[in-house]
Structure formats: C-alpha cells, structure tokens
Image (tube, rainbow over all chains, first blue to last red; front, side, top):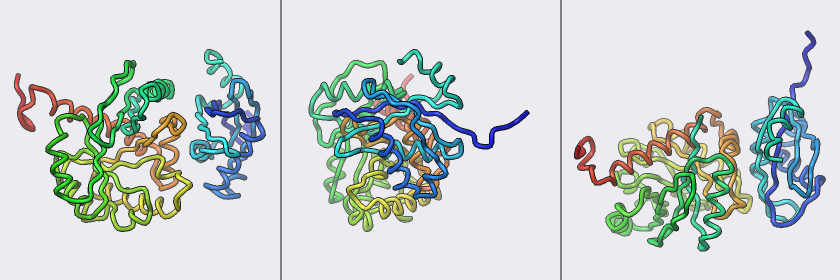
Length: 109
Length: 229
C-alpha cells in the first residue's frame, strides 16, 4: 500500500480578539511566531499553511507537518499580538484529515 | 480522561470579568481553576460547573513579613503561594510546611539573584511545597525571554533532582491571556520538558495539592496522619 511521504496534521483554531483580523494577518502572525521561536529551519520543517479562515466566526484551519505539531502548537500559543491587536489563538481540535476535522468540529460550527 | 487544573488565574477587579474567565476555562477543557488574589481581598463566589479553588499570592521581602502573613491567612485560603523577592524569604518559604507553592520574580534581573537554586531546592525537597512555572513568564516578549528561559530550565532541573513537584499554570490576569491545556504543555518543549512530564504538571500535581489542603482545612483534620472519624 502506498504511503504518503509527508504526514500532515490539521488544526482547527479560534481567534479571540477585540478587533477583526483577516486570514492573511493571522497566517503571517503564526508564521512570524514559529520563526521567532524555532527559526527559519523550524518554519520550513513545520511548513504551515492556512487552509481556510472565516473572519466572521474568527475560526480557521491550519495545516502543519506531523512531526512539528507540538512546536506549531507552542508557537500558536505564544502569540499575544498581531499588528497591534491583542489576541489569543486557541486550538480546538487536531486531526489527520480535513474531512475528519470538520466532522469532529461540526457540532461547534 | 485527564482532569486539567489551572492553579493560577489572577482574579480581576470586576466580577463579570472573573466569571468570563471561569467560563472560558470550562470551554478550554479545564476541570478546575484557582482564582488568586494578592492581598486579603475576597475571592468572588462564581457559580460554575468547574471546581474553583481559592489562592493567595504572598509577595514578601522579609522573613518576618512572610511568617506573619502565613499565621494570618493560612486557614483562610486553600492554596498559599509565595513569591520570594529576596533569598532570605525564598529559603524560609521553602522550608515552611504552610507554603504550598514557590514562585520567583518575572523580572530576569531580579531572578538572577533569587531563583530555585540548589540550596532552596534542597530545603523545598524536604518540605511539602511545589515549584510553579507560569506560562506567561515563558512567552513574555516585554522582557528578555531567553534569559528567563535559561533560568527556568535550570530551576526545573534542580526541582527534578530534589523531587519537588512542578506545577504548570497560565498566570493569566485576563481572558486573552488564557490558553488551552495542551498549549501550556507544548510550550514546555522549549525548555526540554517532555509532553508526558508537562501533562503531569497540569493534572496530577495540582490535584494532589488541592486534595491535601482540603483535607487539612476540613474540621476532621487533627494533624498529618490523624483525623477525627
């Protein structure tokens, strides 16, 4: 049976902030945080990608590599400010596929 | 299922804000939170499904000040933590059985002098107190993060050597500073603490302190090992 070379993890997150932020700002904030904590090498290893972000619900899905899940979580947790907007990002669920993640969190959304 | 406990939420002035923090803690998956006050102000009575623990943060500069405060407040709060601002206080707090949690200053310049060195750790090892890591000390960008991380790493090693229970708490003073339990455990990866160890710091260790102190504060308690039946 063929095996994928890179195993991914998909994280459903919620943004708690007083102001509104768009997906690009959130994505850039996460990338900056990973780079601050683990450097450029860490960022390349984690390979984060924003799959979707809903600015109204302030919720989104981020993809990262399986091995760097803990580092990505730590980097997300350490974000306190993006572009002078104070915020907190909470990871609600983690899954191996987008489909399973959406199924798991369907009750919340 | 793991019961996560955040032993350090600083109680805000406003009761609605405190309620908001407790509600958020429930959403994030905590089964208990400790609301902490800095002086003898009252802990708000908040109705919630999760367990709310009362905590007093003492910040002392002299040994006498610490002993007086302990005599005065020990029986009023479920948990007493001491933030040592001098070495003298750190050593007294470490050997006093009435102190539950030892914390150290956030400021790296102060922390260079007062920290969980091997002397304080050996005193604490013979006592019942625990050592607390606050999540916001690890990620505070206003201060020099790397120097604080280095000190905390050394403190964790000293605590492990002397078998002092380590507690991981958020130290949040508002809802925006709160994080989910797994975020707290993953950040300890920065100071080479494994996920399993970190999990213990936020589940078993705080639960043990609460259990012991509630037993001590109950009317049936006479002295360690003796209780009224």
